[in-house]
Amino acid sequence: MAENAGNSNIITRKYLDSLLIQTRYMNADYPDPSFELYGKEFPSPIMTAALSHLDHFMFEGAAKEFAQGAADSGLLTWYGMADEEEIEMILSCGGTLIEVIKPYADRDIIYKKIEHAKEKGVLAVGIDIDHAFSPDGGPDEVSGYTMAPMTTAELTDICSSTDLPVIVKGVLSLYDTEEALKAGARGIVISHHNNRIEYAVPPLKILPEIAKEIDNTIPIFVDCEIKTGMDAFKAIALGADAVCIGRPLMTAIKDNGAQGVCDYLKKAEAELKKTMAFTGCKSIADIKNYKLITTI
Image 1: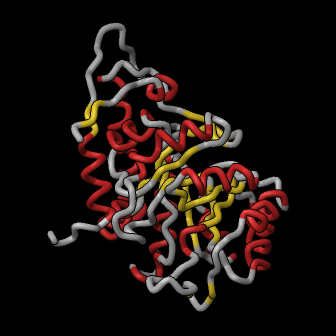
Image 2: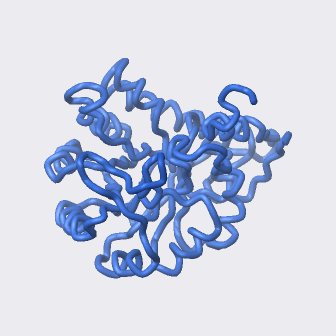
């Protein structure tokens, strides 16, 4: 067997790169990639992925650099597995935040975090359903907390407990899509969580099937190997509403702090606008009607 044959990140990248565009210059115009999410306007549907523990595995202050850079870009910030103080620090940078909450076995922690998010003005919260299991299939342990798989009934109770949008993160099948819809989720993130399971279907390969099921009723976000504005264009063309960039921002933080994060996000936004211009797509709605060509 070839080395890294089952690495889901490699499989995902290969699929992304197999998707090709056709240029359309006649009757084109300067594009506007702005879009609305939960009643708030953003310059583009590019946003950060839900990074976490940045101060722990990078350097002290990395989380603040990340949050400030995202805020300065004007784009939306996702963040996860943070205590109340860290969430408040991220919000103090002036950006808009979606907080991702792990599937704590003690469900009261989830409700407490949602209550705090609501109080502090977080735009939405996510439930990280794919973080329930450890690599051996047992209960996952994160920062001393035990995780547990989520039932549809539990998710329903969580969604109905708040007027904040609840987004289900870690969806990679029609089954989980259907259960999220039944529970009243107001968004999903299609993701294999950075190769959390080997041989996972690339998010963009399953995306059209999921988008058909959702039928524009709730937003679809996509992460995993999204690195550029071209990647964002491809995801939106296949049915996503927005995309999340993760690992490249960690390099940007390390190289140039908040400015590096801001510059990377704005560069990706510029790449998206370029791709829109070259394909005759004047708006995000136009991208959703654009047909890609695949080589595999």
